[in-house]
Amino acid sequence: MLKIAAVGFVLFYLLPIGLAGALWLTGDAPRDWRAADRGSAGLLPPAEVHPGAVVRVFAARTVRWRGIFAVHSWIVLKEAGAARYERYDYTAWGEPIRVNGFEADGRWFGQVPELVYAADDEAAARLIPGIRAAIRSYGPRQLGDYAAWPGPNSNTFVASVLAALPATDAVLPPTAIGKDYPVDGRWIARTPSGTGIRVTLGGYLGLTAGWVEGLELNILGAVAGLDLRRPALKLPAIGRVGMAAVDG
Image (cartoon, rainbow, N blue to C red; front, side, top):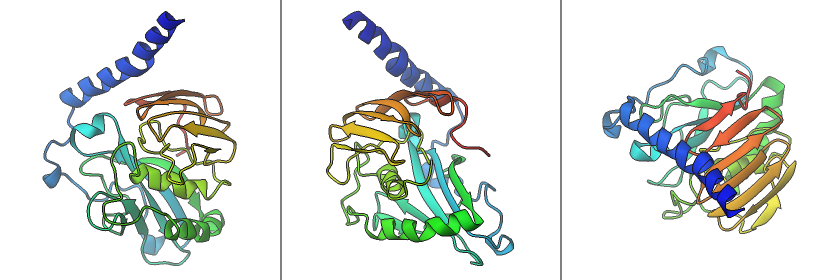
């Protein structure tokens, strides 16, 4: 049994992390984050020509070597008829909840975002009041509350907001380190989708099982697992391998 566990740990944790590190070293990820592109990635139409309500969750590889392991996620809203998008990030500098600090669909210091969740028009309009309420009530919002690992960080913030909206089927990627941090202090809770159970030891070790989230094992923030609803493997540092978590 111990031998099987050791082989599984190598295959599903150490090997993916090593591969992601090699890809980062040989890839074109920006090394000078200060000069990296933070302009629009063209994932949203201009707000003034899109009259309907919009909800988006994006995630992009984070800055410097931490991008080997983790993404930074954020929330974008637009009320019906509004002339601009609103972007909400949780960051390590300034006030943790940062509003409109960056382009709504901007590259995260050179990294192109991936779409995590999308709702439009009436579906988005129904979600926006709950999202605003969840943002207002989010607890760790004072200077110094941010912690890159195990949390609370940007992914903890987004996961907490999504947990207040169980009607959605949004799932943060396995590379969203911090998403399992128990910001409410509960080590046993329902998953954000409300379709399963999450058990976590302060974000350092945990197990998630849910129809929307799939099966995930968290070891020191690194998540490996399996999604049966939209078939895919979930690998630390690599992300999903298989069907995308969201259409589009």
